[in-house]
Length: 457
Image 1 (cartoon, one colour):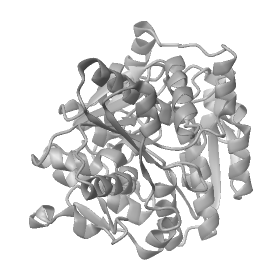
Image 2: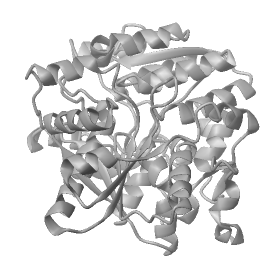
Image 3: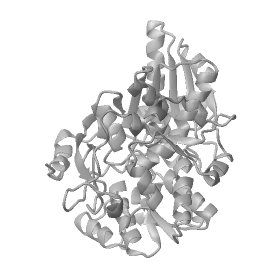
Image 4: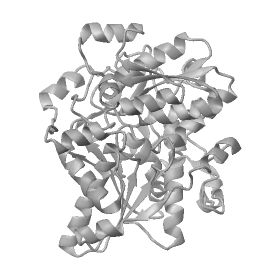
């Protein structure tokens, strides 16, 4: 336990790039609930997860004790191509808003894949290659994770099979073609290629799909194809671990100039970006060393935190994956087709769900058109076209900065700019043409999914 008291700075290179990932679970007083076998409802161990995930990733998934896990040299060498990523003071945005607030953003869009997803993709591909696997399967929503994984698999010479949510497959053809350029096969989900896909299509003809559907298909292919394993770009403990490089770099840069943020804001879909950004700050909060206001921002069209139930649920629509205790809308929930961002998973990371339930962070849901208004405002003054996902955090950062304008408080705001939106122009086009609306599911609609949550004692 003494290792926890060692300053995190010893785990940083001279250029402030992390030498180890930070595992926030080691400092959590209440650990995330274990994954359960969907049939027996018994906790799942390494042997139970081995047919689905890579061996070393399973060890990371189950590790609740070690605060720091060394980053293998091959992964560190790859990180050096684009890390440390920039922490930027948004002077132009501050000037435009005429706010006394100081606004900073951690920009994760300066790598070839265009988003933070590469931080975990390269790690998962590395462990798959190390295990001697032929390839991996996965799902992707808006396409950022699929793009990152296809790039990482190309780097290590692995086959990559991507099941892309059908509505995104149709709306984001350029993201799909980038994956194919890197050598991945991309299938719109649900599809006729898997038993679970055919079952979903039979029950919901014409469905536009969901991440839960795509996960079911990817897992089926992985577990039925020799030499393959399934990898996931969010939600899981291991993914938040890999993404901690975002927060470690952010804190190192702020510490260098003696800056202590008042609030840290991140978009929240499954939890990868948010969990990575807040990791070391949350660690300080858990240890009683400092306090921060931490805000998760999600879409009103897929409001897991703000309107979901904290319960055990299937991680996928086909109900073949383990049960996870998380804030969930129900595994059958499918966001409206006009939902433009990638924040469309029905559940939230078990780690973040536990922290939220324990009161260490707050959450807010925002409407889609307001998100794109904030994205446009940011792009016009800061010169970066943000991804729709990141723009949820931008929206709330602007809201908080305007509150500072009203009160005269000089608060310091840090938010995560998870990636660029240059492959999301169809969504921007709909916004500019006035064809985007703010669909919000009704309580009655959500209740139909809550009623189907598994009964776990």
